[in-house]
Length: 339
Ligand SMILES: Cc1ncc(COP(=O)(O)O)c(C=O)c1O
Image 1 (spheres, rainbow, N blue to C red):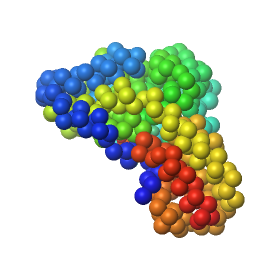
Image 2 (cartoon, rainbow, N blue to C red; image 1 turned 30 degrees about the horizontal axis):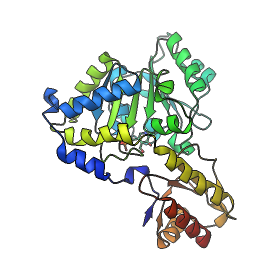
Image 3 (cartoon, rainbow, N blue to C red; image 1 turned 30 degrees about the vertical axis):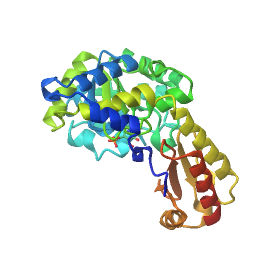
Image 4 (spheres, protein in one colour; image 1 turned 180 degrees about the horizontal axis):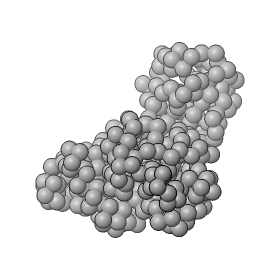
C-alpha cells in the first residue's frame, strides 16, 4: 500500500531504531534524562530560543503555549483554519478557558491590519487579547508557507500591543527547507514555537516547545499537571535527535515528490489542485469526477493508494520519507485509472 494519508505515518529509520536501542536514559520528571536534556538543548539552539521542552505531541505543545501565556476569559487570535482552532478538540476553551478571535487568512497568512484591529483595547466589556497564533506551514491550505515578511509584520503588531506570538510550526522545517531559509529566519518573529518530530522528520513520537525560560518553566508544570511528565523518555528523544540532525535537509525530496504529483494531477481531466504545493501536501479537488470523497478514496485504495478526505470534494495527499519516487509514479497511474 502506498500511504499518502499523512507524514505522521513514517516508520522510524534504522538509525533511529539504533539510537533508541542505545540511548542513555534517566527520570525526566527529575530532570535526569541526559538524552532528553540533550534534545531540548539542541532544539532551543536550532530554534533560536532560550529553552525548549520535549512534549508528547504537537497538540500538547500548542496547548502548553496557550496555557502558559493566557488566563481563563482571555481571547487569542487564530487563523480560521488553523490546527489550534480547527483540530484540537476545542482544547483552548476546555483547558485554558480562552475564546478564539478568528481571522480568515489567505493560504494561511492573516492580514496584519486585520490582526491589529482584532487586538482588544482596554474596555470593561472586552476580554484581554493574550496571544496571537500563527501556523507555518499551514496544513489546511495544503502545506503553504507563511512568508517571513507576513510574520514580521504581525510580530510588530504584537510587540506594539505587548502580546506574545506563538507559531504552530508542526512543519516549520518544511517551510525553511522549501524556502531555502534558516528556521531562525522564521522563529525570530515569534516568542514561542512548537515543532513536530513525528511528521516529516520521521520520529515515532514527540514534539518540542521552545520559548523563553519563563514560558518553558510554566509549560513544564502544565505538562506534569496534564499527565505528560514522562520518565525514561530519552528513548524517544534519541530518535528526536536523529530527526533534528539528519532528517531536516532531506525534506526537500518530499517537496519534489509533491510537485511531481501536482504536475501530473494538473494533467488529469477531472482533477484539479487547490493550489500548487509549497511543501509536502497536495490538496486535490475531485468534484468533477462526480464521485463522493468516500467512493473516490475507496477506488484509490483498491489501486493500492491511501489518501484522506479533506472537506467536501477535496482529498489530501501527503508525501514523506516512506513514499519513494516510484511510489509517486504508481500513485499517479492509480489516479489516472480511477478517474
Ligand atoms: C499544523 C499542525 N499542528 C499541530 C498538529 C498536531 O500534532 P499532533 O498530531 O502531534 O498532536 C498537526 C498534526 O497534523 C498539524 O498538522
